[in-house]
Image (cartoon, rainbow, N blue to C red; front, side, top):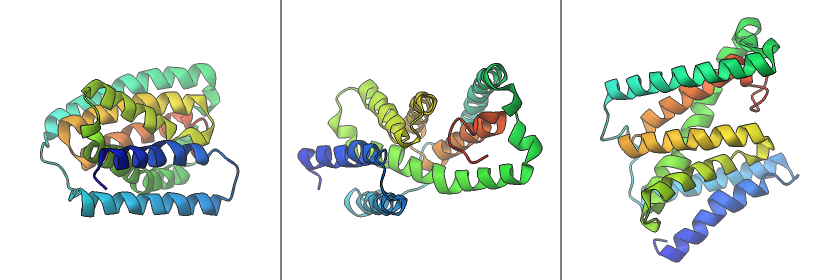
Length: 208
C-alpha cells in the first residue's frame, strides 16, 4: 500500500474519479454509501498504514493563528459583503436576520459534520500520504487546492469551484505551517460560516 504506483492509483480514485462520479445522476443513498466507505478507508490508511494520529498538532501558535485568520477574515468579509450587495442585495444577512434558528443549526451541522471530515481528507490524509510524490512544494499546494475544488463539483456551480479553490490554497498553507487538523478546521469553519452568514448560502448549496 506504500508503493508509488499504489498511491498514484489511490489518489486518482479518491480525489478524481469519486468526485467526478458524484456528478452523475444516480441514487443519493449509493453516493453516500460510496463516500462513507471512502472515508473509512482514509481513516484506516491514516491510522494503520501511515501510523498517523489525528491530533491537535505540534506547531500550535495560537496568537499568530488568530491574528492571521482575523486579517484574512476581514478581507474576505469586505469582498463578499460587496459581492452580495451588488449581485443579490436581498440576501445580505437574510438568514441571520430572518431565520436565526436555522442559521445556528446550519452552522453547527456544517462545522462538525462537514468541515472536520473535509480537513481530515484534504489536508491530514493528503499531506501525510502524498507529499513524497511531489518534488515541488508549490505544485503540491496547488494540486491540493485543485482537488479540494473538484471535491465540490457535484454542486455544479462555478462560483463554488472558484471559492473552494482559493479556500483550498488558504487551508493548505495553514496546514503546512501548523500541521494541525484542529487549526485548519477552525479556519475553514470561520470562513464557511461567514459565507453563509453574509448571504451566500443559496449560492453555495446551503439550505436556506
